[in-house]
Image (cartoon, rainbow, N blue to C red; front, top):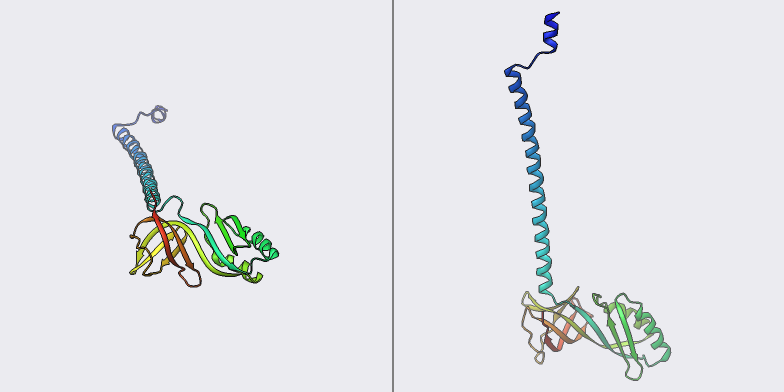
Length: 205
């Protein structure tokens, strides 16, 4: 009976206490390791966010704030007809990104202005005008972007639009890696589309 009571209420020996302490210490070390792992992951996430932010700032500094084709002026034929002009205006306004359409029947011209961030789509303009028997004699654009060089050629990049600059004796020479606002004649029948710059001016960044 005494031995049973003694066993039930036994106080852990020195060895048992040491074993319990060791197990407790191991558990604490495990928690510390988990905490360290969480801290490392948090630091990695913060670093990743900083890298993304720096990349965004770098890209923003490379391109002008309003980098895009802002306006297209078309010299046309056969738009002097009142019905053709009215139908053309309605359909051109429906093109994504178009802000305003102005048609002059007397001057046989169409001016298409774009909203900020719009993508220039000359093919969509042709698809609307050609079935109405309205011809396009000349495409002229006003745009803001940056001059880049690739493979020995100069390109004008305006937002999502990219054009190759046509080398011409009377064309102004624009330095590479320069942000500019331009007026240019467009050849949209080849790819990439080609520009002959008439005038340009540097854009402050």
